[in-house]
Length: 299
Image (cartoon, rainbow, N blue to C red; front, side, top):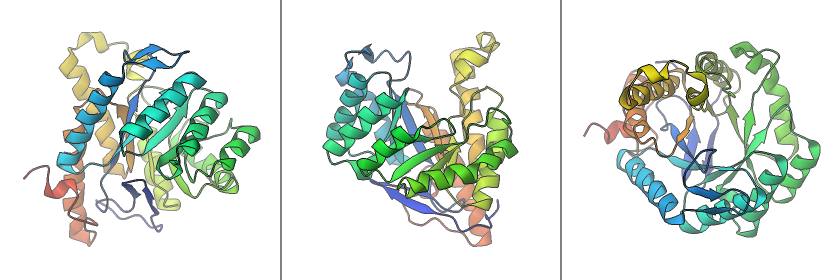
């Protein structure tokens, strides 16, 4: 493995530590829930959903992550203000996990931020996101509520390459900081099925240059973008998606966003973390604590 040149930033968000050199801290699983098509959602506009089912999936993946010492955050995807308020309140009251406010439009995200602040959960909440299309009005509103952690999404539509993501990073980082955000996580904005490749390279380049935690959602485009998926069975498709995701860890990814019901990602991520950590020990970087997959996934 390797060691990045830049000093690596390490953040505490709720009960999760994120960032650092490869092998120092485990990769964070950001498990998405209530996304488009999720059968847990009953009525997006009213914000009704299967609470028992949702808690069941959260507890299942949380238990799996705890066994192998993989950090977990919940990525809350909301399509209406009512839904986002209900989801944030549900996650906030029923778990101790950090969560990402990942609404489809500004008013939905603001509703989630307001609910997080109302419940006093700012230290567990992550705003998603500061990006090239973010409006000042939205970011000013978020700033009022005291959230310190944000995703910085590097969606460069004019140059969707690894270098294109690097080119827009500094301006977006500075913009996020100007609105009071202190804990920044760089998201490579994967919008096409082949983009995890340049996204992985961009993760390496950006961590080497700036040291911020970085990662992406590498497999959500499989549903719409992999036209030949029907050639394979469910196990083969799941294996392919998992390989696409875990390959990012070899380039230094600090987080991976992945669907909460796709539990195959947990042992796979933990195993790769263990291999990375074992390799990094050979050049002097050791896990920050015994709560690392290196000491749990294979023993």
